[in-house]
Image (cartoon, rainbow, N blue to C red):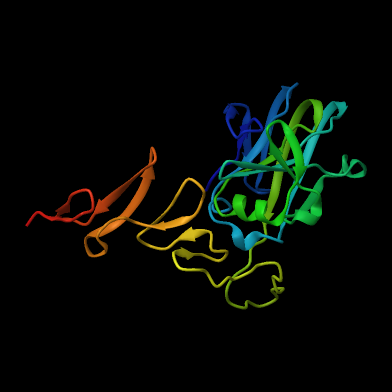
Length: 239
């Protein structure tokens, strides 16, 4: 099991103390007077390639104790592939305990770049969800917060085969990829290909039959040879 952590809006841990877990309710609680924005960092199987979650809902229950007022801010943050998408709950829902937001560009998600916010588009979701590194849920929507608890966190995801009582995930696509690309949305490179500085998949400049893979580092491509082979292009047989 992966316990959520208390972080800042970049996913960096800010407090590992004052946390408790109630097993019967599956609820995590942070008891501390907070005068700054803190986030619950959700970990585990909800991270990584989550393209099948595009169009699905992220739902959670947040209980907050405070003698302060609600402060506008980013309530959910998704970080992946160097990009940050943020969602802020509507003002009329500030005092709700249960929340659900769809991972879709129609839900007023914003993309943060160079200190400004722009409307997030479908390609932004494809980029972030292909390698989701952080799901951050604001733990302190009121300042100061004296106690904050989170539970019932769920992330909807599509599956390839029909299951009982499941609804069709109409937003998830399965693409026919060009040569060198693979994945649900052609977000990955095929074996013996690497991503260049522009995100394009390029064939490895190595011998195919003696190479496991290759990678780009400092603008140079390095071939990773199969056992028994070496050389810049894995062309040397060490036997």
